[in-house]
Image 1 (cartoon, rainbow, N blue to C red):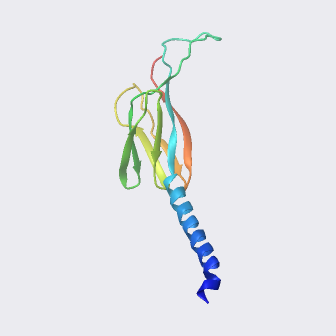
Image 2: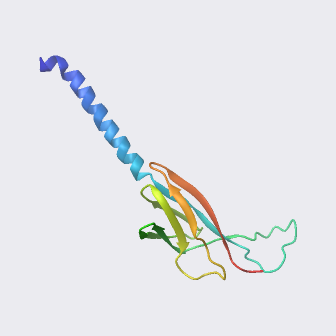
Image 3: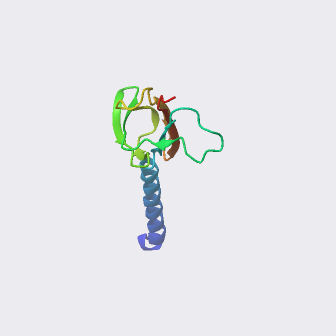
Length: 129
């Protein structure tokens, strides 16, 4: 009797394994990724049509990540101000953990959803005028 049902049993086992794999893959994909930029980077007024960019990446900067219970983790941006961080679903506040600019960089609030990497582009104010 089991032999006749063997293909059905194997199909059910494969389907169950596939669903379990999908669930764990989606939870691993939760978090935030993006870039942190700072502006202005040149003092004084910028002439209209100027080819000189007035924004730059916030490179090698340490940011702290907190939720309602306190600090969860931290991350460091790369040389282009980019980062990618896996986080469990929830509400987070991200702040620059070091003094770099005359004005605060953040805090930035972000909601992380299950199975989704939330893309962000955050701007810091250098305080330069």
